[in-house]
Length: 274
Image (cartoon, rainbow, N blue to C red; front, side):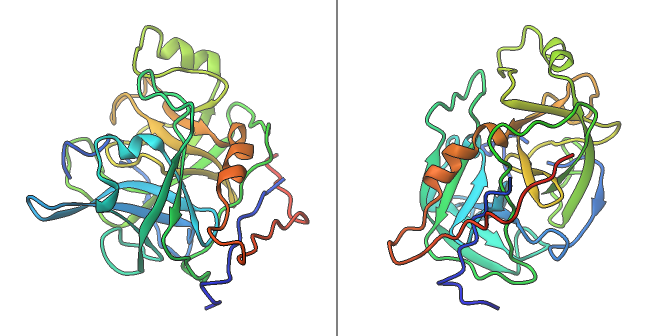
């Protein structure tokens, strides 16, 4: 394992009702070795003494986690932790505390838009076979309608079902934004724009607890899970924040906390989303 204090690999690449909604429906079980960039955002409820996996994030550097602003609605930051390097959301791996939460400044909860946040960790994570980073797409990168995208998360098999703790993955397909707007016509819950990726597939989707789950193409994070209308309907596509429209902002805030820590940007690496 490399030294956790020096590895900062941020790369520009070309349960309970109080928790935010949004867990993965359908899909296949997988392991952290296949998706070492995934992290669980856990939350401790001191009253009943319950620890839950509340949301999901993806590691952008040894210091930084990309997730959703909505995850923190009604939550106390002192009761959050990040678990990295484990297939299981509530055990194993490495647990790190929050140092700072940075929400996108134009985030709106309802109708939901700008649903992106960066968490800076109190101590950096060491890069290994089970802890690694995802890459950001260049600002303004587009994905063709119908493209296959992968979503990685922990979650319920169905709405109202038991919480599963092992990692799962699903494939969805990007839906045309006009089709997505038509599906959500009249909704006051979300704002559909070109800063959103809509996606769906028969029998698959996000559900309770998937907020912040990364949508990826290869090792590039193209979206983060933001909103779903229902776990068991094909009438409404799932909504993801379109990360390439936030790349410049993410790079501006995802900086190392000390001036003696260098954040390398491997410009030789370029995303190919075609």
